Length: 194
Image 1 (cartoon, one colour):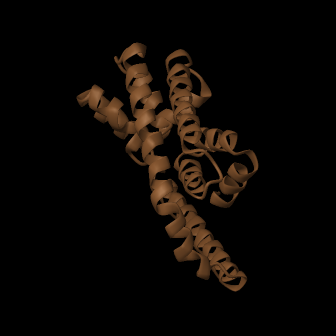
Image 2: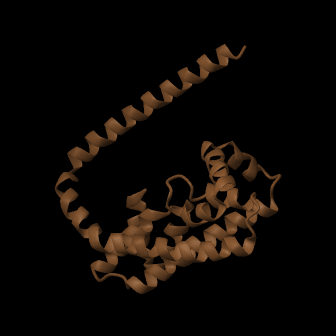
């Protein structure tokens, strides 16, 4: 995905940062920060793009959760393991969860949806969303600015065609093993439930 992300950002600049921050999350913001360091983008405009994308994504997900409680999207969301964890956290510490969900792995989409089903008001969520999305954008662009070029420098010697083919084959083999393991596990649990 990061190859596509960097291509989108190189092709579309600030709009690419906005789109990747909204759709994918952190990778686009980190790549945008690295490109700002290299002088290809302006750090202020990409920070604003990342901030607005994160804020709008959070607002849309909150609105969908609050207004479409019976829809298919919500049915899929409530089946996720992260949803039950988020629900547990928000019941105990609603404001703390609103302040932190954006920085917890796996909560970017589930977080606002879960908050929308809680007693947290839309106004309270909007305030937390405004502040946390700004902090998230500043952190992402800052990390990309400071460590992005260094990481690219470190990994560049390892990105040869031969190593890419070997890594792709290994990743494909791991994917096949994971699919086989998961299907075997499902069949075993299905057999036990009879």
